[in-house]
Length: 59
Image (cartoon, rainbow, N blue to C red; front, side, top):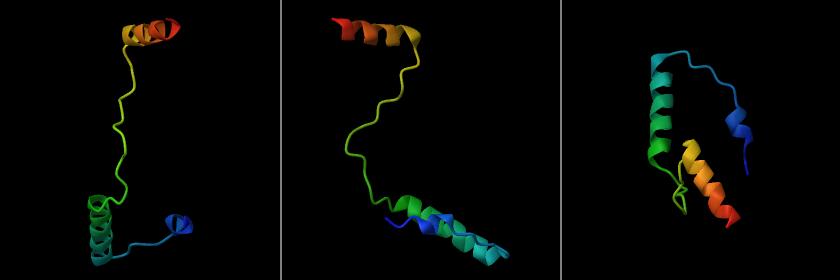
């Protein structure tokens, strides 16, 4: 997997280059190649819900 390109340094010195860079970022955000295969559940933060979850494990 090529990862060296994400560590490249570059300077944006004019508005035209900045606009092109932002446009490229926005385009890459819209064209997602990988889709999640399963839904992601948010982390449990309620202490009572966590207690109930661990109580079910002991049964």
